[in-house]
Length: 555
Image (cartoon, rainbow, N blue to C red; front, top):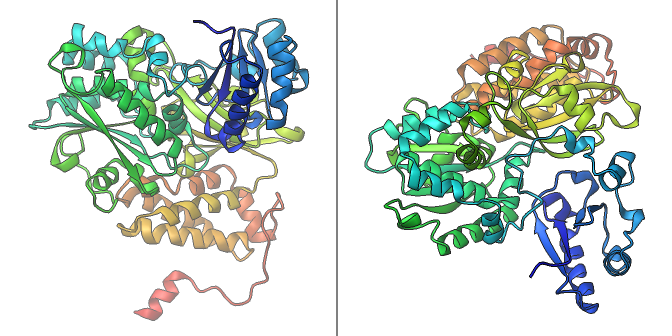
C-alpha cells in the first residue's frame, strides 16, 4: 500500500561519515513513537550529489530538501513537517536557487546542467532492494538482449553508441568487446574494475553504493556478448559499504534467477564473484588487477598480448570499469543513436565527475561530454569561495594535468584534454584558486605516485623519485635554473619508457605546470619567492651535489 510520504535519506559515503545512519535510526524511532510507520517510508539512497551539504534528505511528494540535518533535528522534523505539515525552514536549503525548487519547481544550477544517466537511480531508489530497481526498468535490457538480439548485434550496438571506457584511457568499448569475442579460447571472463584509487575521486564507489544492480546487469550483457560464464568485480577494501551492497545485490539477482543458470529461461548462464583488493593504486591498471585476482602480487606486465587476447588465467578477458558497465543498460534500452546524440563528435554520452577543491558546490556531478570547464566550475560548482580568483583545474587524478583559467572555455572531452596536456582519467576534478602554489601542487601529486609505484620498472621507480627530489629542492628555495630543463627532459623520458599507465602519466602534473606556470618555478629558484605563500624556504646549508656527480663518484 502506498505511503503518504517518502523520506529519502542519503546514504552516500559523505553523508554516512556525517552520521546519516544515526539520523535514519532516530527517524525510525520517532516515527514509531508517533505511530507513523504505516504512513511514512524511509528509503536509504545512494549519493544525491551535494556532498558538502550533508547529511541531506528529501521528503516526497512535498519536494522539501533538508540539509546538514543533525540527530537533534529529527523530532522537530517529524512533529512539525510530518505531523503538522509545516516544513522546518531553518533546515531547508536557503539559497534563492534552492527556494525555487519548492516555490517554482525549477531546477537549481547545481542540477540544471547535469544530465543523469548513470546516476539516474542514485538518490532515488533503495539500492538494497532489487524490486525497486526492477520497478524502474531494471534487467529489461538483459531480457532484451537474451531474447531479441544475437551477441554480434549487441556488440554492433555498443560500437555504434560510441561509448568509450570511463576508466581513463577512453578505449572504444564496443571494439574491446568485439576483440574479446573474436579471440580464441575455450573460456572467457568479464571483469569489472572497481579499484578506484585517485585521491578525492568516488564516482565508482557512488554507483556501487547507489545502484549496484546496474553494474551487474551491464556485466551480464557483456558476458552474453563475448561468450563468458563467469565474472569478477574487483573492488578495494576501503569501500566497505559498496562491497556490502554489491554482495547483497548479487545474492538478490541469484534469487530472482538473474544470475546463475539459464537466465530468463535461455541457454545463457552467468555468475559474478567479488574480489577485494588491498588498496594499491597500481592495481587499477588492468594487467596488475588481473595478477591480483589470480592471487599474485599486483604488478603490471608488458602489452601485447592485451587482456582481451590473453587475460585472466591466460584466457580472453574483458575489463571495463564500473561507470562503463553502468552505461550499458541505457544504451540497449534507448538505442545507440540516442546515446551517440549526447556529447561531442568523438566523446559520446555523459561523464561522472567528483568535483572538489576551492569551489562552492563540491560533490558528484554527471554532465554531457563537451560541457566547458567554465560551466563545470561556475554554473555547477557555484564559483570560487570568498571571491578568490579562479586559477586552474587539475583533471584526471594524480596522473592528470593542470589546466589554467585561460582555457576555461575548453569543452571537456578526451581529445581536448589531451591537447592541453592532461587526461580524462576516471573523473577527478580539483578546482584551484589564487592561493595554490603550482610547484608545491606538482610535488604533492608526485609524492603520491612515488609512493604508489610498484617499483618494477626503472623509469618509474627511480625517475619519479628523482623528479620529486628536484621539486622538493625548488620548494625549499634550493633549486637551480637547470633543474627546469631536467624536469622536462626526465618527465618526457619517464612517460616514454615506463611499463604501464602509472609511470606513463605520472609526470603530467609536473609537465603541465611547467607548461602553463613556468614563471612560478623561476620565482622559486631565482627570487626565493612563492607567490601563494605556501612554500617555506631554507637557507642553503651545503652545495647541492647533482645525481650525475654522485654517480661519477661511485664509478
